[in-house]
Amino acid sequence: MSLKILAIDDSRTIREMLRMCLARAGFDVHTAEDGIAGLDCLPEVEPDVVITDINMPRLDGFGVISAIRADAERTALPILVLTTESAQDLKQRARESGATGWIVKPFDDVKLIAAIRRIAAT
Amino acid sequence: MTDLTASTADPSLVNRLVVQGQYEATGNPSVVLSTLLGSCVATCISDPLAGVGGMNHFLLAGGDGSGTDNERYGSYAMEVLINALLKLGARKSRLQAKLFGGATMAGRMGRIGEANCRFATAYLETEKIPLVASSLGGQRARRVRYVPVTGQAQLLFVADTFPTISPADRGASAQGEVDLF
Image (cartoon, rainbow over all chains, first blue to last red; front, side, top):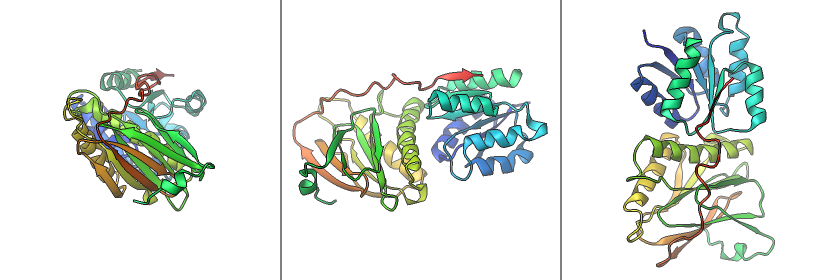
């Protein structure tokens, strides 16, 4: 069965890029336009991996990570941050909030897919 | 477009050059952003209500500018500018854009200018950011000055001149880096 990916990003351009790239790799891709929308669709999608942007309206990526980790049923759900940010303090904050990994845009297809497969398998 | 000749001659204004691969966002009313464009495109975006704005300057290098790598780089160039503006207090729903550049320079870069124009206009349309003014295509280089806090721009065609300002290194940052914790 295909791995289910929930990609949360406020840029429609990025959502479509992720959808195309990940669907081509055989993943079942769902998208949401901000943190609130992402959390809203979690129970319906039940993803194997969440990919989230950091800078988003309504609820940012840190809020998404914290909300997911506060849910006892999702403490082990892998969360990859995909962002234009590369500052170490932000990366450290994401790590401490419970993110599984951090990828800096513009992303590389092969590296992103490899990272998803790796964290989904652990 | 508003003529900025008088205001940019004001010695109290600070001129900041945005070269290929760079972006700049600010809410400082003393700053004027400027650039010189051949095939490259500069996107100037402002939120006049918040009094913030900025400019990027990008070139989708490689082939005819199409392909996922180029689109990804272009999206990155747009997103870093938009994120910087949002951090300064802009709202995405209030953003207004102006596009400049994308010329077909004789004997240089093939039709890459057209590809840059296509990408930039399509990106703004997809992200629902209104394009309020543009000067794209043609065969001449352009000099652009932009007041970010007001969104006013000044355009000057520069005949028979190709920009020679060195681009910022596109690969020098952490782009594409994967860090699994």
